[in-house]
Image 1 (tube, rainbow, N blue to C red):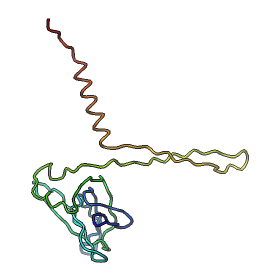
Image 2 (image 1 turned 90 degrees about the horizontal axis):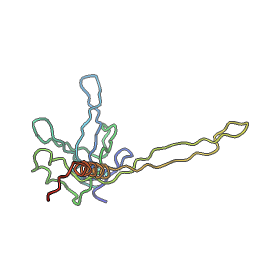
Image 3 (image 1 turned 90 degrees about the vertical axis):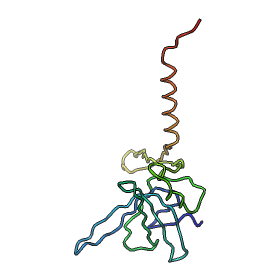
Image 4 (image 1 turned 45 degrees about the vertical axis):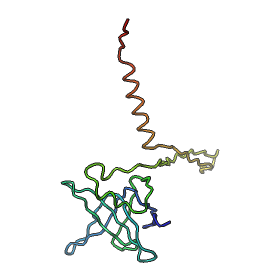
Length: 163
């Protein structure tokens, strides 16, 4: 697909909120600089493929950075949120101001929580069996729970009947 790319073993798509960890050389020192924003575009093909990340800096100024996918200065890319978008290029975010400039619907993300159950043998003490349990959490379900608690608070207030 044209709207997803694999960067250092991490698959990212257009609309995802990502953190790009980039090596910066200042004099004889090297440090890692983090740039967090929304992935708004993936362009090119083959080794010339690049991606654009946009964030809102202080003073409501939009900052965009473009990196090639094959870039030795990129240490890692972390996906903070999975975005649910219907466009390959999110250039319409450039005209938005304030919180609307970074708001994108989010997908349900399953977090895998590994829990190991260890069944030990009688005498040898080796691990015999391991189980992995999945725990599903999503931002949408948390929002639904918050709305339910708000509604229940409204209902719990005393009602005065009119006769």
